Image (cartoon, rainbow, N blue to C red; front, side, top):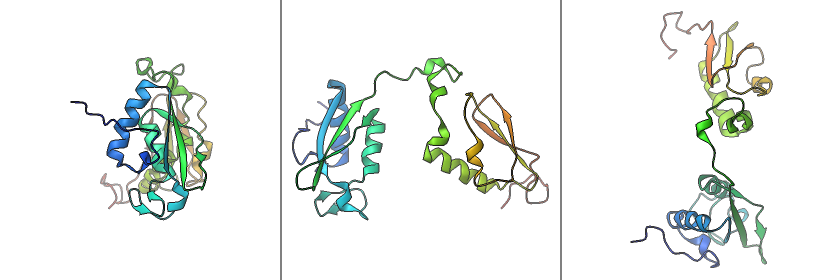
Length: 191
């Protein structure tokens, strides 16, 4: 039994199918070709709707959903093409060339060295939120331990401009130096 549905990517209603059917169909299509195109309802016409809600032109999925789909399928989402009438768009996914060589590790010559995690909004905002929750005390310092040279940590300071940064190049771990718990130094985390 074939676990992947045989959906026609060229059918105008392809994008109106449940995501549980679209993902395996797109994965199979990307295995067979470097690039696949399909038609979906125009996400701009469903502003304010949640993914899967019925909208004015069909089942709504935001642009963020389609970028997530591309990312999860290890593909690039190319610039969408608005179709005549503006109610649908043609999306194209291009398979990423080459797989990431994880055997290289995290050294300065690895593919990971190319990544600037501070340009990933999910990472950056998660880091900022974590630091806000920790609430470095006056006089406290943040020790930024990183694995790749050339990463600029100067612009992460916007939420904490008065906290000095100490640099140590070894691994992606953040530690607070001279940490004092708000509970008066009892060693217990703040409540």
